[in-house]
Length: 321
View 1 (cartoon, rainbow, N blue to C red):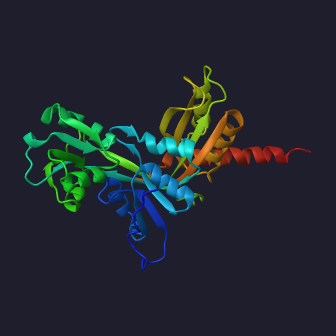
View 2 (view 1 turned 120 degrees about the horizontal axis):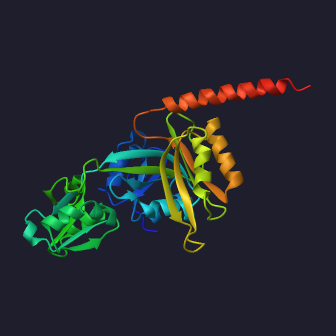
View 3 (view 1 turned 90 degrees about the horizontal axis):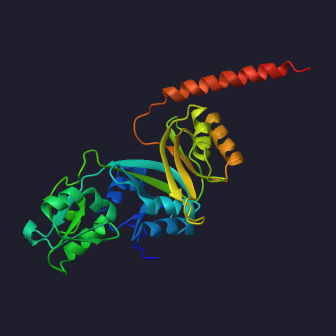
């Protein structure tokens, strides 16, 4: 597995080793550095998302930091599918970053000189309109990360190359920003998750639980039977996505669900308990602090009603002679 030395080096202060999608200059690194505790850790940049997750599972690093969802392009399936099907890791936290995509190139490059644009598929897809309007017919090439694309362009081994990535990558690799804010839609954000081999963070009151539900059978009402466990308990779902199980052929899907609340909450625990009993299988991916502003009034109301109902039932049972 490709690995660069931890940035802190041998004299770095003791703390967790955090693997992230490198090289330096990625949006992933930018999001990671926004977290004070992680920025002070031993940082290890790795070449690909699978490398990061394998390093966590193998114990090479203590934590992994990977993108999981983009506001424009949706789920980063490489990360999500690896967590669902290939690894037994738990999400520890989520981080949301405002993303500004830029077109980067050598200092003397004009738009007319661009023959090929390098970046990761998600970044290229976010900028389709700009590329069609400004660089029609230009070749698009894949890279492992936006920073790797900038590093290749900065190396200057091939002329006519530009990259899509963050401004910080231009500064690191000696490039200029040819165009700023080139994504097709406003509000471009990417959500990242921190994963570990084990451990569930304690509840904060503003948490999220991620699970994968495997159906017992593909039949009418199977999705409703999953959703009603949450609806009956007034648990909000912030994400619901179906994914092929990769094992059962066409039509065999599982559901990846982000639910408001923590596994320590009785309502969330009850919903997961019912799903585990009724469905083909449930994989727990973590309960962890949620990013963004807290909006828990509906959940607090539901929790109060649940406790009142529990007290009522307990009172009835006390009457049994």
